[in-house]
Length: 184
Image (cartoon, rainbow, N blue to C red; front, side):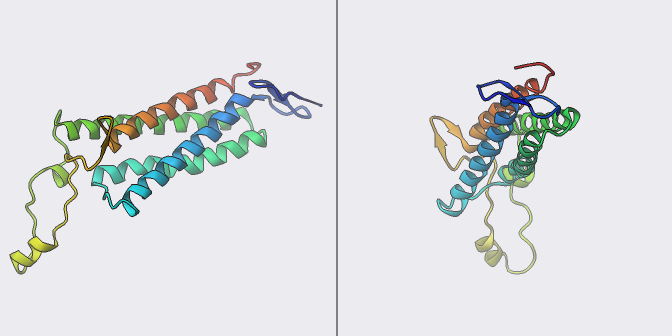
């Protein structure tokens, strides 16, 4: 029975399948980054009272899938499950992160006015319900997708989501590469 501890080394325990440390670290990094990102989004919403628009909320769905998937993938790598299962897990993470990076770019483009966003959050307010019009106007709280509530270094939260998701896609790709047989 041999086990290597050096960075990027192949680990082999009692004849089980070999995986590199890079795959384990990639899954763990995605778990940490995705968890920190969604915690940050909740912080902006709950503590700083920066309310998310509908597109912001939809961008969170990928994180809600990525966090448990990365946790399961991390455990599966540690338990040395079959390589095909791990490949499927990393491919799913790669697809989720790439999709969310594209979604962040789309939302950023809506904020910059490069293209039209969905009418429910960037078009005119048309449905004020029935009853007293003035009461309904006082109760309407529309968070517009095309109005940025917060920027840092010129980027909105949607822009940062695009960058963070692209980074996680690169990490997922590296984790996938670490699953190749005989690769250190």
